[in-house]
Amino acid sequence: MSGTAQAAETSPAYDLLLAGGTVIDPASGRQETADVAVYDGRVAAIGPGLTGRALWRVDCRGAMITPGLIDFHVHIFAEVTTLGAPAEAACLQRGVTTAVDAGSAGCWTFAAFARHVARQVPLGVYCFLNVAATGILDIRLGENRVLDHLLVDDAVALAARHPDLIKGFKVRLGEQMVGNSCRPVLERARAMGDAAGLPLMLHIGETPEPLPEILHYLRPGDVVSHCYTGNRHGILQDGALLDAVRAARDAGVLYDSAHGSSHFSYAVARRAIEAGFLPDTISSDNSLRNWRGPVHDLPTTMAKFVALGVPFLDVLERVTWRPAQLLGLAGEGYGRLQPGGPADLTVLRWTEEPYLLRDSTGEVLQAPRLEPLYTVRAGHLVPCVPWRGVAA
Ligand SMILES: [Zn+2]
Image 1: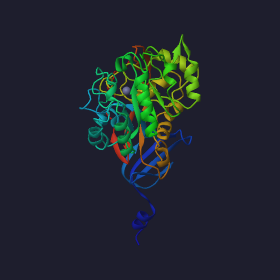
Image 2: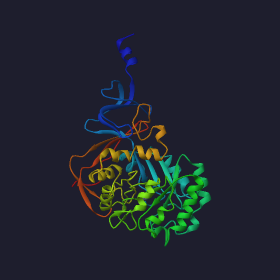
Image 3: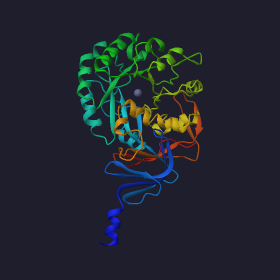
Image 4: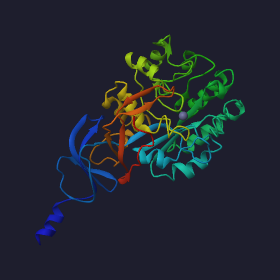
């Protein structure tokens, strides 16, 4: 047997080798300069100086290699809804390997969402089904104003048929969406969640009732979106965190940031962070309305939290391991980096120059930005597209 053949037998072959990056995995606490090798859609090995032939080799020096980012709140039902961003450009090509659509589809439009988005785009897609059968066709619609459109039996049956896609129910509670009270809408949403055994995800801000009255309807595992909204009836009163908000968290209710065009206030975030109140998950609420600003994407949203003083590891955990757990994907190895686990990875680096990072109220922070370089989804390498904003 020739030396070459022997080398081929003993030296493993990889599809992809991400070489020399800082591997950061909040779930295990791993943080080291290392290579990550990928074979057949799985992480084959992690360690310094991996040897082996690879079809593709990416120099990751100066960059971070993290678990694939999970955006827990986006709107990617393009073409059927007027707020749907293109999933590949807004998520996959900006570092996101798994995205959760938050209520764009309702039970009358879910089949189209499943066919044309969830089973079509090359990233992990899940959804919270809108309690209104129409979903959010257009944000001016006010989808919960016709109570007869909240079809409990239909929604529960649909969720039972698609447990692989539907992870809960989304209910938007702004005055414009529900009219002069949240209560009848919340009662139907509660009935859906209880009958299906699935969590509710609530859109708050500008609600007819104050937040404590809404929290009263929630159970452990339910999610309050837009937790740093600067709009009326948010988590603060006279600048202090409401006792009811903390009590709900202690009882198991979860909070998600869901930035969006109108739901992320640096002023609220600063108060909440000072009070030790971080979101359980950090998400962008990316949509066609905001993916060219002020939100842009999930990495830019992460950079805003870091600019506000939240340690990077705490931010990263909230876009990887935490959402993987909430979606029931942690057991399959998503949201973390380990040999044998799914090869969902993101390669990111901090930009050197400061950028203008705008919140939903118009306040601007001048801070470095996170730039995704590559997304790896199920072992496939996807180069990222450059940021669409402007430097400071
Ligand atoms: Zn949203």
